[in-house]
Image 1: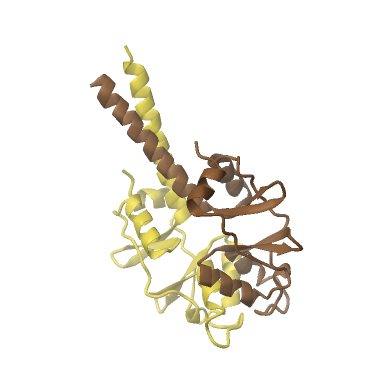
Image 2 (image 1 turned 180 degrees about the vertical axis):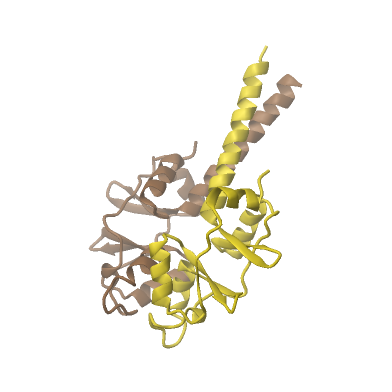
Length: 145
Length: 145
């Protein structure tokens, strides 16, 4: 079974981040430009939050006087749920399902080394299952028919 | 293989909608209340568009003079990609991936009868593949000499 490290090898380790004082407009522009659903919020090299489309949709209505100039820190999610690169794809899926989130930063020894999305996880799980089905069918053809 | 109407039978056929002139804030409140990622936009009994978290994130920065009071029609996606009740779940997945959308309304003779999300589709495909794997494994075990 694949783990997070395998996943990052395919998708790359590039992580886009913003500072908590950046405006919502800046964050959304970066997300649109890079075609992302979430950004990691970093301050003094520490991860202080995650800002996703879901955070924006849910919290913009709760924030008094919300505008596109509101700082990210007001709308980001914290604490941050994360995984390490040795964790399995199944563990990521379980955490995302339980916490109802679509993105997990990957942190090794305090260093941010990637970001995995629910799309990455689903794609990997489905292709592993398809491979298993094919292997089982091959086995039946070769050994049993 | 299951189709869209099988899926609707399991998840229910409730569709939440707003009108074209509903303020964005109200549409987002409805989405938060119902814990959903998109609402249909219905005007004079016809589908005018669909409004999702993704639309909010991408378009609130690109439309001039955006505010939380802007009518939802200025941010919605239109025309709307949809599926028919007899289409397969695989076809939904293909359309969602190709068009990069997370929700598809279901139309039956031009009447809106439900909406399916990428989450519904993925859950279903995983369960189906999981069942196939179990069937193949038990076939092999039963027939081992």
